[in-house]
Amino acid sequence: MTHSTTAINPHAPQPTSLIALISSMWRNRQLIVQMSKREVVGRYKGSAMGLAWSFFNPVFMLTVYTFVFSEIFKSRWGGVGGDDSKTQFAVVLFVGMIVLSLFSEVVNRAPGLILSNVNYVKKVVFPLEILPIIATGAALFHSLISLGVLLLAFALFNGYLHWTAIFTPLVLFPLVILTLGLAWVLASLGVFLRDVGQTIGIITTVLMFLSPVFYPVTAVPERFRAFIMANPLTFIIEQAREVLIWGHLPDWVGLGIYTFAATVFAWIGFALFQKTRKGFADVL
Image 1 (cartoon, rainbow, N blue to C red):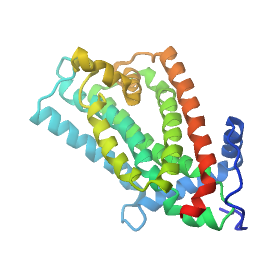
Image 2 (image 1 turned 45 degrees about the horizontal axis):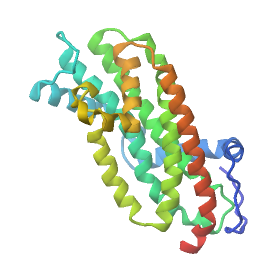
Image 3 (image 1 turned 135 degrees about the horizontal axis):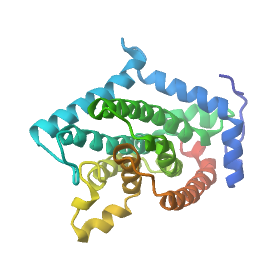
């Protein structure tokens, strides 16, 4: 991985257009891939099993979910019957956890992205705007491994896979865009407001219970359902279950609207990041 180490003026104005965003991602694509790999490998550096942990972690979690919810709580998912419903609950729950983990991993790290890379701000010609993209890339890697574990478990429990599972990347795509936009906002705010990191940890914990991870939306009382549906994770979790668990086609219109809204939000997040980055060097 090579990039210039020439000093630049950190106060210079930066482009904020959508075209500037896309061209930056394309121009720095090799750097993004290399640093995302380094991010993933670095997490397991020094451990005996290395990258294998990225596979065994979700296997362990799914095993725990299956045991706790099928043997202790004897839970059933609404509308699911039959002998397989014990293990089915754990698999359905795991879909929600994959979506939640993808979102939470990025937004929890976002406030500290600039703070932990001060050298890039002050001394190096470095495209700071790609740091949230790198964090998202690393989170996506872990989500894909978890998705592989989920598909393997589903096939073992049921003896088949739904062909609609091929639409999973299209279902997750708008969430990735939205998460990226939020990461730019939080990375910028994290420089000026150090409390953001602590606050986000609390918010993502609350989101875990306000998202339909452990329960179906239909189990929520009617008067509270609007709040759950307003949660941006709800639609994606529900759509992921449609294609992975129930074998239904996704809601294409809903995904289209979500993608458009997420793209606008991501652009706003990128623009905010670019506008505020000239103040990073002064604060750091």
